[in-house]
Image (cartoon, rainbow, N blue to C red; front, side):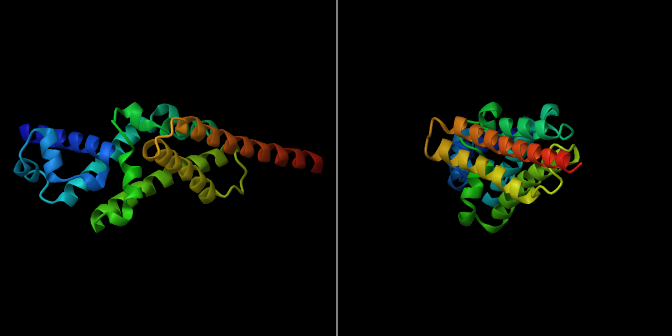
Length: 208
């Protein structure tokens, strides 16, 4: 049990460090110093630095899931569920208690500089995000909140773009207005969807 508690402490410290400084800045020394352990104490749990970085991404993805995919933001509510999810997802790191940026988004930015196995883990996390958006969009289509011919992949791309833009603006550029701008972008996309839906409904009525 003591070993498991130490491993958990190492990962929590490493996650906070990745949030504050980025995955590329993670070293055995930096994590050991923050966790009040020796380097060998960290290596005993994570023999390779890639093991530690992949585990950080796993923990970050689990924290994102618990923070953003609760009962209020799950599938089943159509477009309102999608909107609730987006509003929670933007800025979720603060709600989760992380000290800085999203470790997953930062890893995606750093993708070209990450070793193979870590790069694959970051890409897999991005795929989970994208598939979550696709699942929520398809649910909204099933509920007839979106048109049947909605380009699901494109809408998911647009929404992921808002999140990544918010990440860069908020954490890299320190834009104090990043939250408002991101939420405004979501509102505008939703408004355009509703306008398209209303137009389609009006055309159907005229055709009857």
